[in-house]
Amino acid sequence: MSHQIALAFEDGITRFIECEEDQTLADAAYQARINIPFDCRDGACGTCKSFCESGDYDEGEYIEDALSEDEAAEGYILTCQTRPYSDMVVQIATTSVLAKTGASTLLGTITELERLSESTVKFAVQIEDRTSLNYLPGQYMNISPPNSEFHRSYSFSSGPSEDIVTFLVKLTRGGLMSEYLTDKAQVGDRLNLTGPMGSFFLREPVNPILLLAGGTGLAPIMSILEKLTEDELLDVPVRLIYGATFDHDLVELEKLDSFKTRLPDFDYITVVSDPESNNELKGYVTQHMTEEHLHDGAADVYLCGPPPMVEAVRTFLNEQPNPPQNFYYEKFSSAAGTAGDSSVTADLSTTDSSASVTITAPGVETGQVHRLDDAACAIFDARMALELGVITLVADLLDAEDYATFRELAEKANSFIDGEKLTDVAGYVEANNAYHEFLFRRSGNDAMLQAYRNLEVSRVMGRDLEDSGFMHADIADEHLQIIDALEAGDHERVRALLRAHNDHAIHTMDQNVAAKAPA
Image (tube, rainbow, N blue to C red; front, side, top):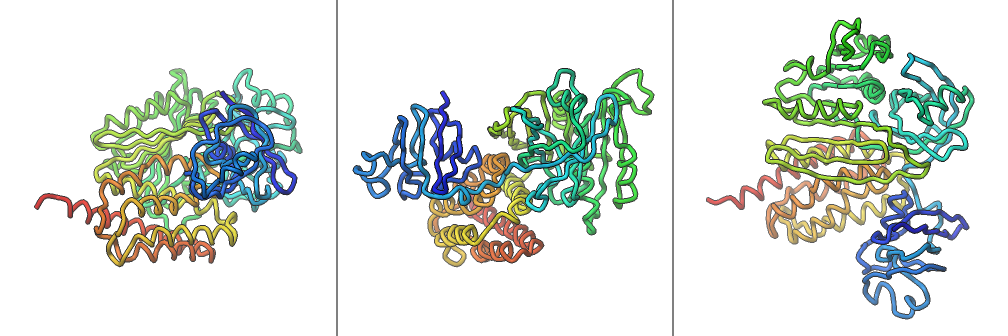
């Protein structure tokens, strides 16, 4: 059962969230992207102490140092432990400004509205405060028309550096957004856009790239292509297979043609499933995917399309003798979301050969599948890819207080390292996780946070590391150097440090595993 919680901040601002009875107030607030104070989450530090003005609740478990008996009797609570039995009004000991939210709602104005075909509309939006929006190619926004109580999720079709952002929409009969775009929308209309959302985005282009798009799943693929044109060092082949149901569903072909000259090694083909199509290639994308596209499993594959296409491709790739090392996908459904609904769930599944993380939000499912030829290497590489992405999202969000907190987390993790030795595995794993998780929390992108958590890096480290075991000598310094470079705005230095840090973490894991092996 869900209850409404009113969070009253010191500056007079009140925010409302929904909280399940089996959920703490702190977790519900963070799910709603409201960063109320907390530290330990175990009822031990008292950082999240707040005052309950009204409502019934389970106060949870905590120690006397965090909340005294007299304080509890007066109505004080710890939000990291409290679970509601009813609606509540809670005074939060900070201002709404300090309850920072990375995924913010921005205002935008429609500047272009174009019917590309009978099935597709393209619209462009001028964001009022464009500098406040950092997004990764492949991500999406939750978009609400004027005075509406619903949103729909649409991927950017524009590159992250473009001033005007664009979106492609498949028109659905009876769909609220489809009706708005075809019957009511006009240039000059104001929209609410919340985000960026999602964990589907371009990773570092170090392997050959295969892009797969179905219908308006072309949008995030075009954003990825735009980003790739900005990479002066790009030296890998990029291929696209663009699938559609009918000929009229194929759009933006002139734009795709332009990438042949804007990228060093790019080509694409179109495939239409309608048997009556005039397209040269008919059928499904899987029927036209070759070994050349997959590079014997060395290619990174990115797919966005309708659910049946995604499932067909997943099955096809799993049946290959050399499935791709990294497979990223996103599928949009017709499921609607209310204007404030951005709940996210995550799931991890593993086999002997692969690990799959699935992130589900209203109307969207995002996933990543990594081949586990070397399990620790694959998991740490996946973590690094997420971190390389999240630094873009937080670049303009962090302030002096954030950097102070970040450094405290680094020092805590480093306190368990003595030269090339690890003094306390359990302490280090917990502190190191808090350090690596910080930027994901600060970004406000719950999908990326859940994707990070479900890689289960901490579980692997706790399993393979040993007290007094080997620790690479550079790791402690790198924890702090990454923060220094980020604060200095030297993002290339941050990226280099993250790559080195990842190599050293994998080396550390390998050494510990080798030390445990029978002689």
